[in-house]
Image (cartoon, rainbow, N blue to C red; front, side, top):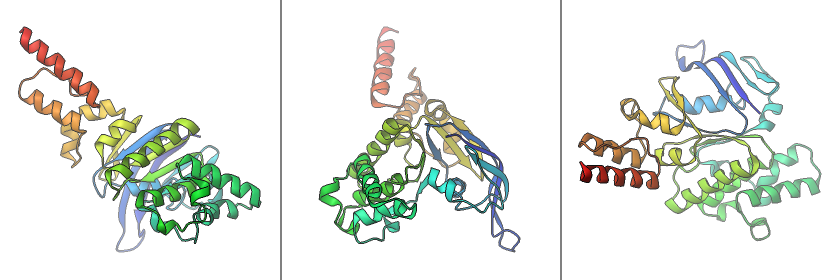
Length: 287
């Protein structure tokens, strides 16, 4: 399910003295099944952009197309779009409201008019996908869970709608390291098992380097870079200039290079960086 964005602008409080442009001339295409990370400094337009993808915000100018659905400034019928594009906000546990985990995850499918058996099947499947035990947890209050588990319930509620595109706004914000790793692993498995498109905002460059197939960089309302993680993080100076960071391994290799070591700076994992540093040590010994 491809997403195409053409000449998209968005202005908050349009036609008022408080008008503020948040997106300018966004042109973007995301293929079915991609895992895309969206990065950029605070205020660059990331969250505004992802809210356009399921119609929470409508373009001021331009259009968004998801398969045959076209979203323009005056679009009205958005339910079909929202069944295909699921949006999980930052701190999605704040969106939980039902008395039980089952009821919370079942809310969307119930509103689709599905029968009880279909709803139960969808809830079971969604909980399994995010690694929550159905029998053990279905009747518990979502507010009795850990932060990481609550976030999984919120994601399961979106998955129960059987969306083909999952959009996540900083899904690991505020979680402890163990919960962060578990949640990101679950998201990565969703991508691999279901082949769904994932678009994720993240401020953790290490996570972006590990999980993303493609990285889109935003600054000052526009897209300024769009490439593979390896190519993006080669441009450390440009990222640092707009207030972003680089992965830990990239940072280490850049420091070594500044000190005269002959190393490549595009290594993203610990294993790659270790091999590159060992090669550099051998070259130095043989020089």
